Every structure is written in C-alpha cells, then in structure tokens.
Amino acid sequence: MRSIQHPGQPSPQRVAAQQAELAPFELELPAHMTLMQAVAQSMQSIGAQCATFRMQGGGFEPFSYVMPALAKTSAHAVYFSDTYPVEGAVRLETASVTFGQRDGKPWLHSHAIWIEESGRRHCGHLLPDDIQVNAPIRAQGVAVRGATFAVCPDGETNFSLFVPLKSMARPVQTNMARTSHAGDDVKGSDKTTTLAQTPHSKGYALRVAPNIDISTALEMFCSQRGITHATIQGGVGSTVGAVFDDGRVVEPFVTELLIRKGEILTNAAGQTQAQLDVSMVDYKGGVSEGRLARGQNPVLVTFELALEVLGVQ
Image (cartoon, rainbow, N blue to C red; front, side, top):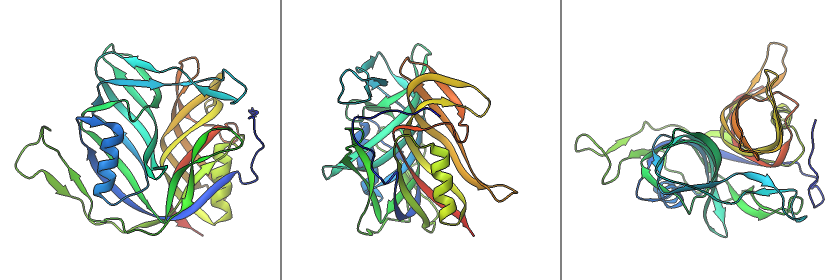
C-alpha cells in the first residue's frame, strides 16, 4: 500500500471521533449569493452549527476551483493548484460537503463534480467564498448535534483541517423545511413544504488521518463499537492515488475525492465491510470513479465524514 511522508510527526490518534446525534434534513440552497452565504443561511434556518450533506442540481456563475497539486516547497508534502476560473455557468452534478466552524465563523469543505458550458465534466475543490449559486441547489444530509467540525492546525500535515470536537448539545429543529426563495421558479402560492418529523439517530463525526486505508479505518472503528450497519453522510477527503475494486488503478498519487454513496455492512461470515463509491480528481486533471478496493487506499491528507449508525450487535 502506498504512503505519503508529511513534514510533521504523525499524531498517535489516527481516527478522531466524537459521538453525536444526527438529524436528517432536506432543503434548497438559495441562489444569488455565494455558496458560503447560501449554506450558512440555510444551516442557520434549521439551527445547525455542524452538518455533513450532499448537494445536487442547480449551478454556479461565476465559478472557479482548485485541484490537488504537487507541493512547491518543503512546508507541505502536497498542496493545491492555482485557481482555475471557468467561463459561463456550470451545472452541479453532485458534491459532498462538511459544514462546521473556522475561527468561530461558519466554514465548509466541499469536493464536487460539475458540467461546464463546453460540455466538459470535471471534478475539484470548491471555493465557497468565490463562487455564486445561480440556480437553487438541493441539499440532503444530517445536522450534527453534540459535536462540531472545527478547523484546527495539524502538526503532521502543516495544514489547518476540520477536526471533530465535542460541542454543547444545541437543539436542532426536527420539523425541517424545504424552502424556495424569491426569484425561484415556484408553482403555487405556498413556497414552503414541511418535511415529516424524523427522530434523531446515533452517529459519529469522524476525521481519518494520513496513511491509513479509509475502508479499513471505518471497518475497525465500527467493529470496535459493535456497529453492524452504518451509512456515511457527506464524505470529503483525499487518497494516495487509488485502487478500485474492479482492478483499475489511479497512478497519480495526489488525489481529492468525494463519497457519492457509502455504507458499512456485515457479510454472511460476520465480517465488517466498507463499500465506498467515489468520484475523484488527480493532480494531472484526470477524473476517475468507482468503488474503492478495501485495504488499498490510504488517506493522503485527511478524510472527514459523519457515520450514521443503523445497526448494532
């Protein structure tokens, strides 16, 4: 299995976790504001200081992004590319998002797949303060109660990264709404549809450190806690290249990815197995998709997600 040498010493805690309650939501991010503003406003409307979710539909204009890149100095093992501006509007296919706090203010981390006006389908790291939502975006995921992702300095990688920290158990509204905003194409006079009230579920906010296979880390975490079935909410991270379960290999070793669908299951033999379907971009601009092979995909810099527990022994 590949590995990456970061400038700092590895911390002994390779999987940081905080137990939390997860409250499902579905809403519409409003247009005519930056992505950061749209998400922050929507999270405030449901009383969420932390969430992991996926976005679909809608789009952005103006739009720019960055990709993973080779490091230019010894301060980091890997880094980000220059910013790539895109002419015209882009249509969002899907994205995974971690929403939390940076310096006491709302912040997010998101990797996405989008389609440009030219027809090019691409993947990369969204710049939440620099891109503007030009058509409402569907967001579905979980609000996290009792824990928050906070940006903290990481001595190993020399980056500031989302890390799950314990927080005060602030109430999360369970009567969540899907709201349309002025200027949207809405039929009828009722612009708010209230979703059915759903009980909170048990879960964990997780961050996985470098050089640990992401599937193995999740399987061991669940096995140690008697978790037999769980689903992954959100899922934003990076790996040292990639190996898919069909044998395909992504040779460029610097990649960023999003989990499109993730689940932890127990097979007939009683073994815990992670099934992670991902989209990724490598530092050469190649886009790859598939199910990650178990035991062959170490984390590059970080991996953050919420684990929703569905079954225990």
